Length: 385
Image 1 (cartoon, helix red, strand yellow):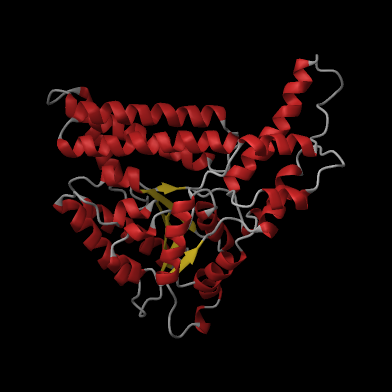
Image 2 (cartoon, helix red, strand yellow):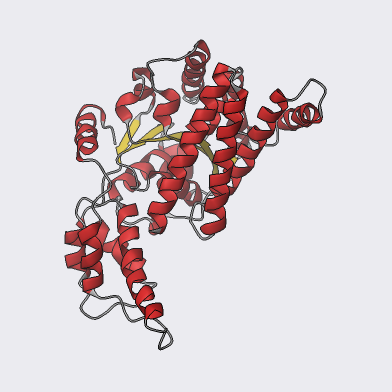
């Protein structure tokens, strides 16, 4: 259950990071430090145990960012003039270099292309029309092109991978920003840091490099919440200003904002309008499930009785992460059997149809049907692919 295990750990990291942000907002630095250290500990666990995960570069960059935040929080708990305070000042001074992205941004892109993503053909085509074609032939778009693209849909359907694939397709720069980390960093100087992000992106675009700013869980950053402080409102207003600035047809810079969310209904209305392309990333259909099964099982031995078409039918309602877990669990049945009976032969037996059936019996889809219903309702109102 590699992907499921990583997802659980990712959720724990986000939970502790948000708890740290809220504690810092209250001035409770001890609680903030505790939670940020827990986030670091869990990230280190992911990196240590899943070194081949496609998002490993993002995890490594996140770890460096969170460790810096730990130092900053520690400096706030030290007496004035202590060693931690000096180290904190050095970090802030380094951050002012204008040839580097702001330190809360992860300038790294996973090695993934559209060919590595099963299905989602409509989403891929919409992204090509909005980003790839204008970059390749801007002269064919005298009326301009979208700068804001919202990817919404159930969790585990490949929204982040789509964003990274776009950057690879156009040989651009991929700036990954998670709401959990950026909101914590933005406490106190929110508007200035939003401006830093966009200033850096514009500078790189002026140098001829397309820039993709990918914001994960964008509803946590740009949505309306029941309790918020003035700084959060100012951050949203600054973001609106910066997004509007990207539409300046006099420059036609290739800077794009791709936001990903599982809960689009939480977004503030002005932001919905700024995302000219709103692309639904659904659960995989049968064709996509079949292709994903082919990709995943190409690395293992299958028995002749395995029917991928039938498996694709059986996996209706499962997201991509679920399907990866099922293939992994089916294979692990043969590995466990291999060791249990003394490890005879060079390798485990081929995975059989029965292995898949047994795993599917005890593993249900992870996506809540109620969430799917709400996504479909939002799609009817706001979809703009």
